[in-house]
Image (cartoon, one colour):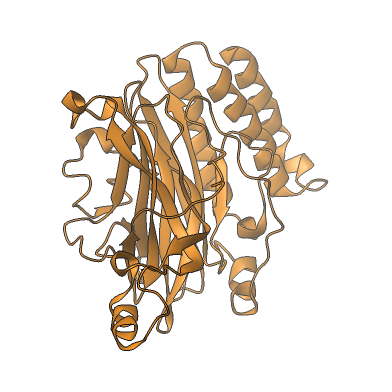
Length: 342
């Protein structure tokens, strides 16, 4: 198989200059990337998978620095998740390889708008999960990445700037899966990204929030509108102050409030003696969540999550990317997108 695909790639690039006159350059890149992605997904050995993937990474990085590449969808790359931030300031490509040992290796690139250079830069993501320590309490950069397949970018307004939170899945190994909430920040002067930060209220040690659980358990972590009880435990400090000064008809009356939350399953060990052994952790039936207030995510417990939507990314197979939506370029970024890599 490897020889056949190599020959096809050679033919594609042999006619590159000729075809470039008849077909968009990015479409030619996409054709070759699709062939390599097919090789990654269908190779029989780990070495073949990794060889195809190495060529895939090289070619994708080359494609992403081409002019107008930011608005090109690459929608034929079926095993690669492509996300665009709601404000269109960056997008992320992530995918993974499941090895025969059961371990996952994650890969990715980010295209981000550089205000200083007025163009989009490409940031490679280097998975160093095996070497990382203190996963919940450390900020990592893109060269020391806690690998993840990202499926949601949340944007919040903090003063004059936007802040970004990622939801992702880490395959870890055949015994444990992880889902992750973490902020992402970009260096203003160079193509570099930082993952993690002090964004969780009353959880100062947490730079990211991680759910660790049995891979066979379908575990929810997603951003959606949900109702939650306005009891004392779930009120913000400002709301608590208001409630003390207000008179209610009944002390037992609990009002419900709807808002956008990151909702997730509260996980417990299947048997108490398995405490701390995350391969035995499963959803308890309780749904908790985080609400964004004043630049921080505040924990809310026991949400009244009725008919919560299950995450469409199941841990047992390679997830397909979300249905690609039409990309656009804001007015202030239009010129920069058209002149990428010039």
